[in-house]
Structure formats: C-alpha cells, structure tokens
Length: 87
Image (cartoon, rainbow, N blue to C red; front, side, top):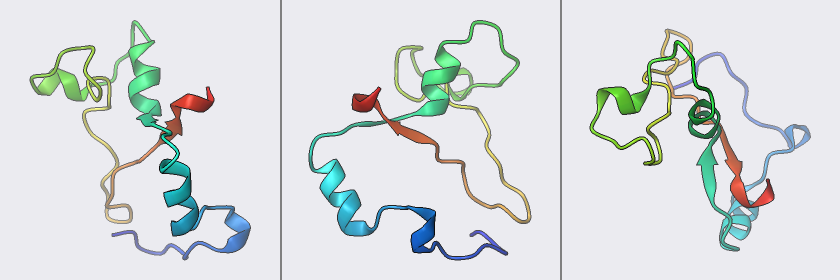
C-alpha cells in the first residue's frame, strides 16, 4: 500500500500491460539491480538477504539488501530491475 501517491500518467513514460507482455514474451530476462550491483562491491556495510537465509553466494537474490523500505508512508519493497539482455 502506497499512501499519498498519484496514479501513473502517460507523461511518466511507463509501459502499459500489453506493452509489458509483449516485451517479456520476447525472452528478455529481468534481474535485480541491487543483486547485481552489491555482488560487485567487496566491502560494504549492507546486510544481505543471503546472510540471513540459506543461499549460496552465486544464487540469485543472495546480494539483495536484507531489509527494504517499510514505513508509515511507504509499505512496499523497492523493486529495482533491469533488462539483462540490453546491457
């Protein structure tokens, strides 16, 4: 639940449902920018999800932050993803 936020408008440049289905039916794979980025940093002070659960370091999700934003105003996880095939 996100409070005090407006609905998306066309000027935001977001894909609609049909555009998303078309994009991902072409075989593009998503991965987490957090997981990818934090796996490349040797010394950081961020608690990782893989540190609290039984995951191998090579398993997707290991390098996700252990905790994400959850406050009175923002009650959702941060979903930052990217298209791997475009990088």
